[in-house]
Length: 262
Length: 262
DNA sequence: GAGTGGTCTAGACCACCTA
DNA sequence: AGGTGGTCTAGACCACTCC
Image (cartoon, rainbow over all chains, first blue to last red; front, top):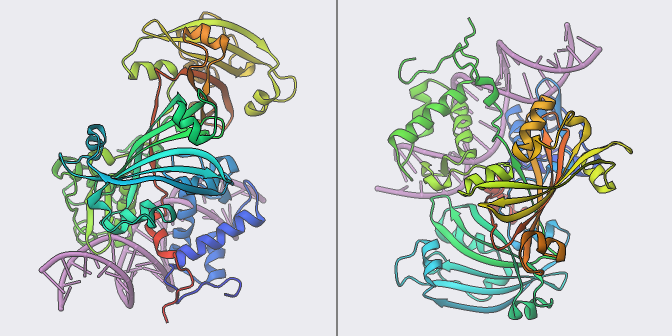
């Protein structure tokens, strides 16, 4: 594909292709607070409409890679702003982000009637079954976390032991149900490793662990999975950005909603 | 303003007005997973372009109030899906939320040239000083956390030992600087208590602790405080809601980016 | 005044879902 | 086949910022 052209026969939308080109531009040739080409410039360069350019930049804005200032331009967001909000990511994605090579040992996989608290969290009727996986997760070949995942059986028909370690569980659930996974409620707690956990994670008993527990939901509100993961405290931290007031681009302008133009 | 009309002379953009009307519709007359009027229907009702309708629904989607399904329609998201990002709260506010009565023992208070990492996090020039507080925080009279707070001296002129234990440090910084506190970056890590921490918190050495560290920022982008807090692992957990990447709409479609239409 | 992003219009074709 | 949301075009006027 030549420079400054987009593939108009691809299934990939133009705005998404353009966003990827801009991402490359930002990551390879620009630094924090540098200005991006203006929207009109991009319209001419790539021969797309301004709405399409704005769709592309909207995407990068939502991802925190760039920010816009009216009347001034679009700029590269500082590094520390990029991965700051709570994002629902898989272990695999998380490790890649930290620059580590993830892998998985499946310890146990079964179909069962779950414990009561698990059934409650998944909103199951008495007697409904779940798939249960216990997995040791590794980073660069070193034990990193010990996780148990429960998925309602009816959400993952035709699952096999081959699919799970390799592919994404999220994707499996999404294609089976036709609903996207949109968020997960999580609870973090500091605990210490017992003998069994210590042995599997190859750390001394009594070492600190970060216990992560929670339910992942689909867009129709149905619970998709319940997880409990123990991360090694010496190798794992959790970073987030807490905000005082959720900001919506516009919220400051409606302080006087009765103000009129004429 | 009559039913089904928007105020075209207002400073408030049409898409925002429409979003508010749809929000009312959803909250007052619809329930979970009910279908909203179609985009074309809204175009006719409110006499705006389809792009404007989509801008309005985009906003509500970002806020988690509704979700879209291609080919089917736009639907009301279940109550528990209306996610808001985690809010930045002080220890005092946090304990009140949990239904506990907070109190504080000031262990140490001094003005000093801070360690290098603290100075870096606060963006201080060499030689600039900070106020440093070490405090034992209690809930219902029981030790709960052990915290150290660093505040640039120039942000908290005229501070006194009386002000700190009683009131909120956030409020103090806000009134002194005239800038609101808008967000804080935090990092959580599981650790175990050493002898000194154990004694102060009245727990056994080796007990789990949640270490919370981070910088709090003002609306002008300046760092306002740097904190390190150790919470008792047996009494403290951290709950949050993780949202999936905003580009997930499309991400599943680019598994085979080389696939062409013809 | 010139350039930027913010909002808006009135069309169009497409992919997807339901029937 | 008809309705839905997903993408795209080619214009337009506005508010804001900088010179």
